[in-house]
Length: 190
Image: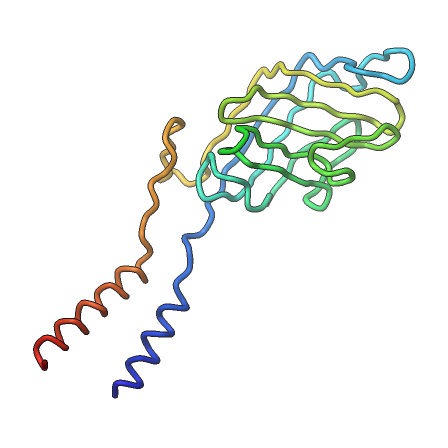
């Protein structure tokens, strides 16, 4: 009986898992896009306004991104899919998150390739940059006619100032209860 109970207790201990990530959505319209740097004559931006959206999973709105689950973005005629994306999201260390093309990583671009990056942060400015393989120039802006970061679950209420308070998992309460039962059982028998 005791061995079966100990085995059950071990299974419960090792099956405890953290709370799952929650979905958040970024919608934006970057405007006033202009040439930032060029290896030749400064051209006009092929696209002076870009709108897009990303859905990502994270433990809270201001926690690091765990996965990007959806993308709706066309930049200079290039449609980006999930396989084309990379991200950097150390919110609490630098205050900035980046979603960008996967070709050279989220924060790298190289002339002669199609690539982009979007930065935003808890205390950082927002920026959108892109390059087109047809033009040796970086185009960008820090002007947005709209930018929103929202929780897709209406039950989630985010406080933009304080970090979320961790909530103990149900398995933690179960293990604590079992421990108390065992202590009282030992006291009664002993």
